[in-house]
Length: 440
Image (cartoon, rainbow, N blue to C red):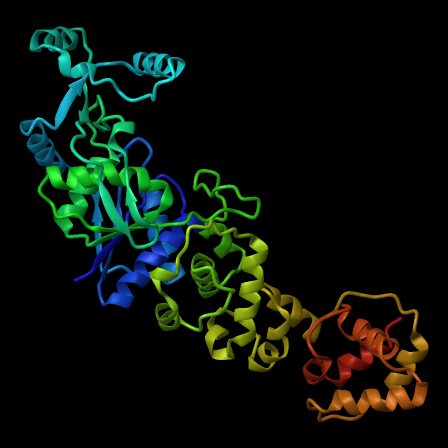
C-alpha cells in the first residue's frame, strides 16, 4: 500500500509552502488509495516546542488535511541509536573532531585554491591514540557518513531522470557533537522502518536524495520513490519562510480566507493550470495528477488568494456557511450579497447597511431623491420592485443610467458599488428606504 508522509519540524508556524507539500502528499495518498502519515521531526529540542506542534496539527486540520497515522521523532530515539550502531560496525560512520572554525578555514583554503569545498576525510587518518587524546581534552566528536560507490540515480516523479555526483559532496554529518542525530539519519530510519513508499517534498531537498539513497542501502532498506516539487514563492519571487511568517496559515485563517480556496489555488498553481475552484475535497482528489507538476516556481500573492476566495464564496449555498455567519445573517442576506464579497468577514458590514445605518453620503441630488421617495411603491416587495420603481423615477425625472442609479445606490447603501439593489431593496424595507431618501 502507498504510504507517504509530511514531516515538518515544530519550530514555527506552517506557511503556504509547507501547506503545498502537505496537500500534495495527502492528495497523492487519497488518489492511490494509500495512507498519509503526519510525522513531527522534533529531534531539535532547542527549537521545537509543543505549542508549534499543536499549531501544525490545528493548521492542517483547518486546511482539510487528515492523517491516517501520526508519529514523533522524539519518541523514536532508541531506533536511531540502533541504526547508528549498525553504521559504525559497517565502517560507514566515523568520528570527526574538527571545530566549526577549523572546518571554515579548510573550506576557505579549498575555495582559494579553486577546489570544491568538500570535506577531506582527515579524521579517517586519526589513530585510536590521537582520538583518545582529543577526547581527553574535552573535544567530543561529531560523526560523518562515508559516501561511496557510484553516483545515486533515480527516476523522479516530477523532475524525471535524476542523479547526484557524489564526488562533489562532503560526507554528511549525521550526529552532532552533543549526540543528537540530525535530520538526514532520523528521516531515513523513520521512512525505512515505517515503510514509506514515496517521499514527496520540495526541490530544495534534491541534493539530500543522493545521500539518503546511500543511507537506505547501508541500513538495508529498499529505496522509496521520490518526487521533488517546485517551491512556492511570494509575488516578488522570494521564498517563503515559517520563521518570518510569510503567508502563514494562521494569518490567512485569521484574515477570513476559506481553506478550500487555498487548497484549490495551491493545487492549480502547482500543476501549472489556470485557477479553478474545486467544490470539495473529492474534487481536489479527482483533479490531482502528480505528472502535471513541472519545474517552474509558482508565484503566489495574497491578491491571488483573495480572488480565489471570492470565486469560491460566490458559489456557496447558504447551508455551507450558515454556521459561520454572524447572528441574524439569514439565507436571504447571504444570497443577496455573496456575489460581491471576498471574505465572510465582510458580512457584518452588509448587515449594518441593510438593517442599520449606512455610511452617510453628500445629499447633492435631493431633487432626484425627493422624486424617488414620492414614487416609492407600497409593500410587499420582491426582486421585481426595484425595476418597477426605478422605471417610474426615470419617467418622472428624465434621469437614466448612472445619473439615475448612482444617487439612489449612495442614498440607500452609502457605497458606489455593491450587490444588486433588486435583491437588497426587499431586505432594507420600505420604512428604512424612505428614511434614507429623505435624510438631509
